[in-house]
Length: 346
Ligand SMILES: Nc1ncnc2c1ncn2[C@@H]1O[C@H](COP(=O)(O)OP(=O)(O)OP(=O)(O)O)[C@@H](O)[C@H]1O
Ligand SMILES: N[C@@H](CCO)C(=O)O
Image 1 (cartoon, rainbow, N blue to C red):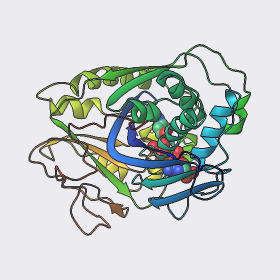
Image 2: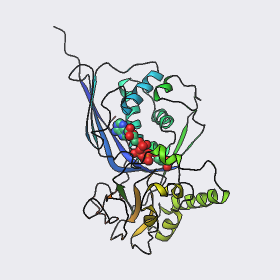
Image 3: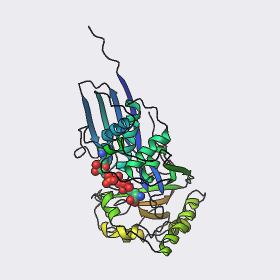
Image 4: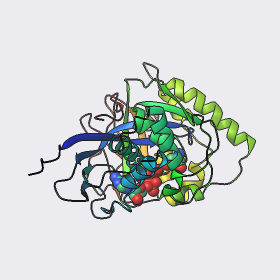
């Protein structure tokens, strides 16, 4: 009788992320304490590949390994290195990250995919190599850098990503062998908490990026550079200066063009520490439609109304949301000083 194969099991946990934080378009990212957890078993209890899913996206996300984003990324990574995924493995995914809401769900899935490919294909790639492959797929580094590294990070790309149609093309695509992304951790003040207000409609990143102009006026670029530099310092200070944070979170490069896609966004962006004591600043999260409020860790009430029906994450109310948040420090969506430490369990 043949011996039963050794069963290996491990867990991959990847946090959600918020990108841009106002003026840091395609530059800044922050890991949020809101994870996707994936339990991997090799081989699967039954023949072939099985994917099970609970949580956000359970009804809509493909469980077919040929079309699921995580397994496609893993397969492309191992193919790039001349290997194949094993014929049998099981993925049990528990996801708390809302889809297409600006909380980096696709980046999280891509990071999970490269971690899966690295272990299933026994590739032994470095974190920088894995992150670069994730950046190639996402096209911009902010979300994946934050999900991978955790905390508050800034990043830039050292070469332009060549155009490709499908993730599978990355197996053979010609691109530079030099490192792609440079990622720098930034200080995040322990006085600053994060509240995400998640509308009950989706906005695909592709659509929100298509709304942006091809060119910008010099004054708008300069305004963002000034604010970005000041804001990254201001958010590391103790105590934080609310007026400086609030003013430096204003953006000229993406939020004005995306405003038409998110009902109520203008009213939320008009909130200030002067009108809402304890508030530090507001911005769109990633490509939206989620709106992000930074707040002082203690004693805080935001007054405001948005026209869209929001899931007021970190807020009170009826859950359909007309108020814009009264966060509790224990709310799982409140990042607080505990910016997520990034991936673990691999
Ligand atoms: N856990 C997952 N497993 C498989 N596919 C996923 C998963 N999470 C997200 N995706 C894919 O990513 C898509 C959402 O990507 P999209 O870029 O539109 O939004 P987002 O990443 O949530 O927002 P943003 O980039 O603004 O933060 C989903 O429709 C799905 O195809
Ligand atoms: N920087 C990206 C984040 C969303 O993926 C954007 O704003 O389009």
